[in-house]
Length: 114
Image 1 (cartoon, one colour):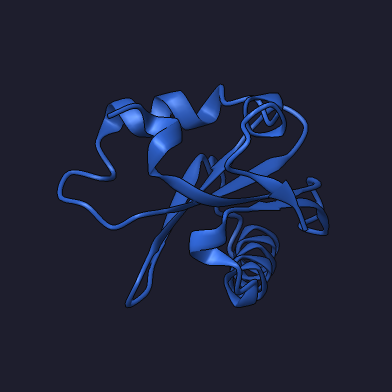
Image 2 (cartoon, rainbow, N blue to C red):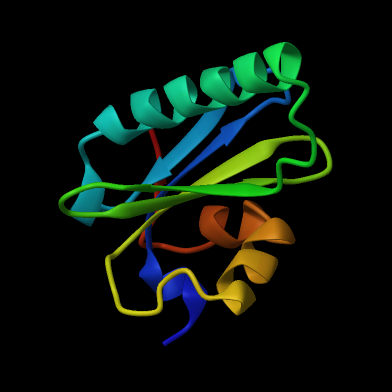
């Protein structure tokens, strides 16, 4: 299975944590998870400014039906909503996600802009 096959939704946020673009599949038409990611990025910002916590590279948020992986990229944060699986957050997946390009989803017929 390719990593792209595990993705059921994606959202891009600017470096201030504001949402820019969303992509979903029919498997995850509910967009509630984006609000959770938005709140997590706000918490990250608060921690960095208050506690001077540096070096944020990724975070995971687990829900009942899905798992979200949020990675910091050069000019944005990318959140990937993943189907839950064993080993879903292996280091190889995190490294792949850090270099992931949204164009992969724009060209994939499973995904539609939301």
